[in-house]
Amino acid sequence: MKHIHVELGKDSYEIHIENGLLDRAGEYIRSLTKAETVAIITDSALEPLYGKRLEHSLQLAGFRTGCIVIPAGEASKNANQLLDIYQKLSDLGITRSDIIITFGGGVVGDLGGFAAATFLRGVPFVQIATSIIAQVDSSVGGKVAIDLPSGKNQAGAFYQPKAVLIDPDLLQTLPERFVRDGLGEVIKYGCIRDARLFALLETLDEHSIGSHWDEIIETCCRIKADVVEHDVYDTGERMILNFGHTIGHAIERLYGFGHYTHGEGVAIGMALLTARTEELGLTEPGTARRLTAILKRYHLPYTVDASAADLLPYIGHDKKKRGSHMTLIILNRIGSCRLLPVELADIPTYITGGSPS
Image 1 (cartoon, rainbow, N blue to C red):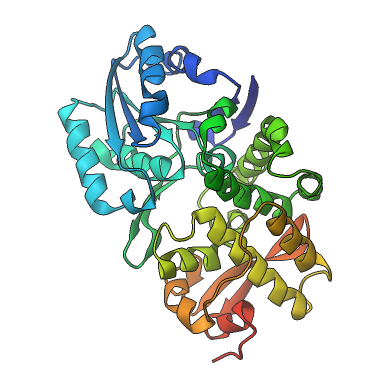
Image 2: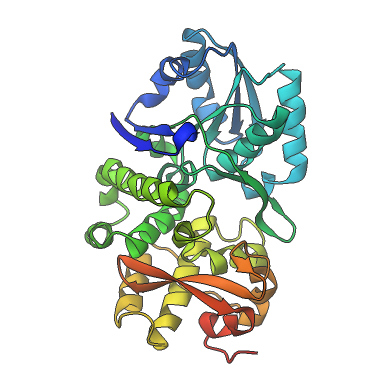
């Protein structure tokens, strides 16, 4: 088992990565809590595959269990679904001395984590991450949220889990599209902080990468933990983790959730922004070519049929907006990035090369 410590003072926790960890989840979670009841929040795609195994592990450890199943997909990350979870937690008799497990990918972790943060003003929770996006990124760092009609993750909180459990074996049943979806975030980590990871990805493909998941997950989690330790509330350095996300989130909203996955949107956002910053002399020549090539290698999109005018209404709701400024994350070169504050009026320049309005 690989252990990564996330040092956040009283909110510190461990990330555990091990094949087969799901069947020992109950034993580990019992070591964290004296809770009597565990509420499992999962989705309709995962529960039939692994729900009984997790419940069995928890029951062997002496927990009473209840399971809340939400419809799979980003469309479930909304206020109505959150209210339904609150009611079901209440029906289960969950108290602040009990524990919630978010068992799923990014949507389950975001939505279930926000429920944990706000139900009874806070119930302890553990993330069991089952998708690539969750295992390499979203389960670590304590960002929990729901979407609003105006944009992604517009209502949320910072609420750290008591632990993150990652079983790479669970990726074996992940649909092919969501493998590619997760690779969008993995490529992001190579771009912003780890040129060696990026170079490794350039030597692999969607078939050979399977034997490297343990290494890739650990690398990404260590980067994320380091960044979060230095900027837990996302006011400075942590913003680098949003490379590609400003445009990516806008694409998701413009086309409707489900047309492009999160990782696909991020891939397009990274490619469009880097092509433009290279043209502007802000990024080392050849960077955009390498980035586009690796996105093609893993069958991820790198362009979109949308103009700056189409995307701007959604970009205007981005969380990195401060007054009339927006902070963009741009690449210096592969493995190195920086924050670039720009005027909102100049944003079109960095999307399509249009003139500032």
